[in-house]
Amino acid sequence: MGTQEKAIDTITEVRADFIDHHRYTSPEFARLEMERLWTKTWHWACREEDVPNPGDYFVYDIADQSVIVVRTDRETLKAFHNVCPHRGRRLLSGRGKITRFHCVFHAWQWDLEGNNTRVLDREQWQGCPDMTDEDVALSRVHVDTWAGFVFINMSQEPEPFETFIQPAPQFLDILRMQDMRYNWHKAIKVKCNWKVAQEAFMESYHVWGTHPQFLQYSDDKNESMAQGKHGKHVWAYEYPPGAPSRRLNKPTLTEDEMRRNFGELMGDVFGDQLGLGEGDGQFSARALKAAGQAIRELPDGTPMAKALEASFLAMKEAAEKDGAYFPVIPPEVRATMGDDWNIFPNLSVVWGADGTLIFRGRPDPDDPYNPDRAVLDMISLIHWGPGKAPKMTTDHIDNWRESRDRIPKLLLQDLGNVEDVQRGMHSVGLKGLRPNPVQEVQISHFHEVINDYIYG
Image (cartoon, rainbow, N blue to C red; front, side, top):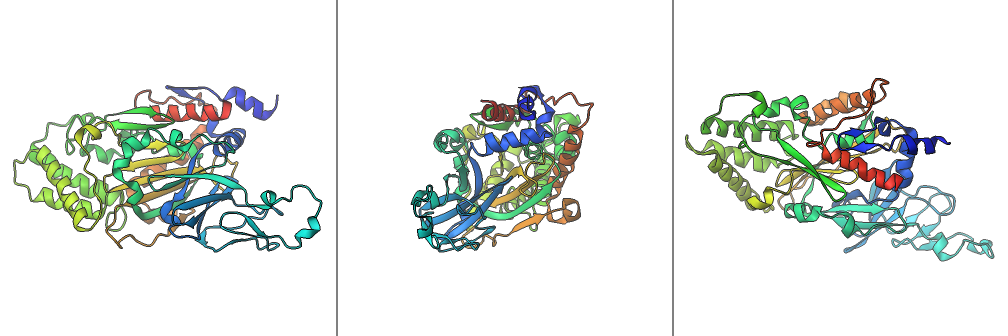
């Protein structure tokens, strides 16, 4: 029995309360993921704003595969494998603008639709097989979009995207993420498996241990659940924002104390700890400033429910004054839409009304089959007023410990976990992982869906 076959036989076990840890450390499993997951499922490559105009391209690298996304006209996106069909040279890197594809090795060329327009001395292949126009065209990749995200699928016959993405749109479309624009993007090298990096943002069970400063402002009770191939968790909100977690066993706060606490939550946690610069992160700095001012202006004795109403009204008015969108979410919708989502396999959405944080773990293109290496993309998207979105640049961070000032403080706490988790996965004393069957369903379900792709 070969190594790969042994991997199939021995690391399949997934339950709501158990995951085989070798799935995070096995090079053979990493190869199976590339062969049967990454080349078969939909995953997001870039944002539509990365390719806004005809001729704009973006290169998406995942493990040892590379895909070019290009806008061919105002309404159309195409995607191609980033390889010349002549001798296999990669065609492009990064992002930019082109009028045609050109291979610098032997000067073959293609139009933006991927059709070959030049093969030097093509007549010299006369009579040779595999030299039709289709053979020398660029190899096409399926592409679709949702909420401003551009998804690709390398399979010849992919699952319809409309089927794959359900039921996320019915819950998240109210946020109009397609109208958000980049605030910042950190591409961080991490010494862990891509799944370890991703799972750090797929549950809130870790708040008590990793982010204890959050508990003085809010309760952390939540429930995690599967949603098609995807997952979400919903915070219970049994105590109003501003009330400390039940875990702290603190005396009940007065309405005024909760209101002041809520003001600190919006300023300290969401502004200082989850943002950069002026605080833009999960919320815009505009929204946080408006909410803080509204709370400070309320008279003593104002009920917490009224304070919440006033703060969100102030955020909405500030957005509208700026020419930006701010979602008005009915309570019955808010109760079920979920606070944190993972779109399978590697798109985590941690939304905050007029902004959202996005997290993506992916195998490191520079070391594609090393299960102990990944790239973690951390992104902030904001509903900006016209002309106010900053110019987009990706901040590539090779050593996050030496770049702490470039990463939001609360997210540094998450980074502090993932590499030690990966080291622990190699311990001979570890018998397997024991996810919480209530608060970490997203993670166990995530592995069940991976099994569906890898083991069928």
